[in-house]
Amino acid sequence: MSIGAEDDGPQPEEPWPPAAIADRLGFLLKHTQLRFVELLESALVPLEVDGREFAVLTLLAGEAPLSQQQAARRLRVDRTTMVAFVDGLESRGLVQRRPDRRDRRRNVVEVTAAGRESLRKAALVVEDAERRFLAPLGREGGEQLRTALRQLLSPAVAEQSVAD
Amino acid sequence: MSIGAEDDGPQPEEPWPPAAIADRLGFLLKHTQLRFVELLESALVPLEVDGREFAVLTLLAGEAPLSQQQAARRLRVDRTTMVAFVDGLESRGLVQRRPDRRDRRRNVVEVTAAGRESLRKAALVVEDAERRFLAPLGREGGEQLRTALRQLLSPAVAEQSVAD
DNA sequence: TATTGTTATACTCTATAACTATA
DNA sequence: TATAGTTATAGAGTATAACAATA
Image 1 (cartoon, rainbow over the protein chains, first blue to last red):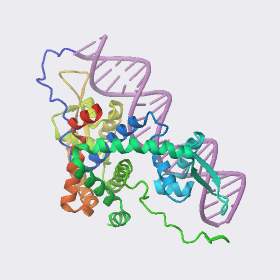
Image 2: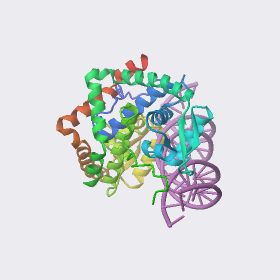
Image 3: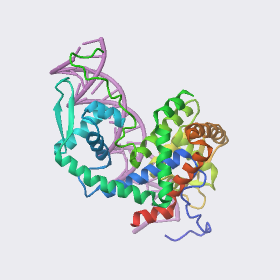
């Protein structure tokens, strides 16, 4: 623990975020996302679902019945990934596969009563985590951030950015 | 491609982002980050470095000489990950390991002249990518977003959030 | 011939454990 | 005894390829 014969002087204290990259958008987005996920997952530990499962449940409960691939496309995950999500949720009785009568290749995935109850509880935890995370920005700042991110994600923007 | 005997009616067009989760902060942060990384990496393809190497070079060039572990801690990556980064950059002559005279366990990692030149070119590409990505928010909106993200990442906030 | 769900497989990124040389 | 760098290894998370059932 002691310092050698030649002292380096006071340590520069490892500033964080490092000044040289603290303004790079990639760095800011990556670490903001990482930090929020940590906060969210630790808040969800006592519950039955994690953050990604919460998103799946929210999507499946919120719209007209969806097939696995429809859900996968809307969450921007691979269909093989969706198989694993539905496997996990179904094994805990939170969703149920039902063959689509009109197209028997498809499974319609329905959220069960237990699933809706888990979702309801998780939503409270998620909303609280978001509130705490955004608190430093004030109420207005938090909403501005959400609006800005939604703008960046809107499809029109996507086409335009890629097209350039 | 044709539709079966029983028509489902007009497809609901797979709205994106899906309304049910379009306001969830985790979803917004994740997909904004993903989309920016895609834009950035495709812009960096013609260059000698990718986005993560750009961050390493920027950090190493911007501050007093750093050891591998100091760099790793500041970028929040594992020291074993930093070994791989330095291996890759050194094999292309962009950085150079030099044993620290005062503590011979350490490698000081120096950016070479070639590394600084690659960094200079990459910085132009990165800044242009950021500008294009943030364009939909206007000049002021882009700066507001950066400021908000910086606020969420500042250490004081971290302690406070975790402590709650 | 194309699509849905599925499985097996591979690849990337990151983290853990153990080793060496230095302190 | 502890730390810096390294290697080998294992674990997420995700994507690709191939297959059966259905359209």
